[in-house]
Length: 320
Image (cartoon, rainbow, N blue to C red):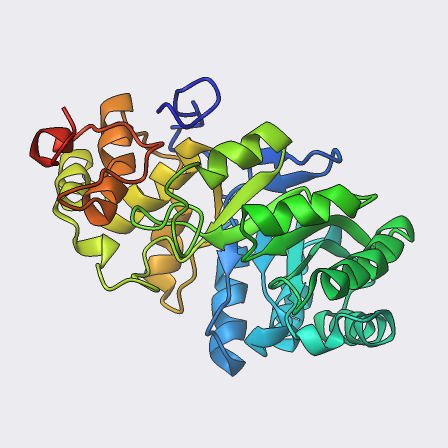
């Protein structure tokens, strides 16, 4: 895996006794975060409450929500009703509305989110997207840094940021982001539109920033469904696990966290069982190389940072 520092997949737990909240990563500021979280995008009302409550019952200790999801109150109620001590749950939420990226509006929204979530602090708070300008993004970040210094936020992050967005923020932040939450799938490993020249995951690892992958099994923004990819299906059959488990385990072994979401109790339990098996180095190379199958053309191999494990160069004009 040439695009990773050390060029190898991570060796993480493959023990059937491991619970979903037990495997953690230490963020650059020293805060520890479970690498497997429960996502709540598109879960609303009682569905969100019941799903979050069940996730907590089966052992998830990392819950992800956002202003835009419209379900922070349900998440907060599920956490409170679980009777699990607040310090044992890693709670993540986001500021989604760029119209509130200025300090007064941001502080008011943050206070409202705390009320809905029934907590007095957030473990990780992030911007859901870059602002309409670099200046507005930085203004929001300054307000978040103040909340961080007050102890009301334990770690700061961003979502849907590309490398240029990150470089701009890192150049001016006094408290740098320790976490990036982006689209992460076999067809879009780290960005909705792939940078063919350099891996975003490799860049983040160099900077000491943790990648959190969302929509690992969702085709969006492409049309190819990862759950139906024949390479994924073959590995799932060989390992006797589901295609979803293969895809989420692949991301984990690359060093990314994952936040699978489901409203189905069986699927919530299935997604919790990502530490019961492991993928071989060959399987990791095959899965990581799939993006080249979807991005390459008859004249160009892309992205350039992925090894040509499928030997596509023999069919590309002017290569090989």
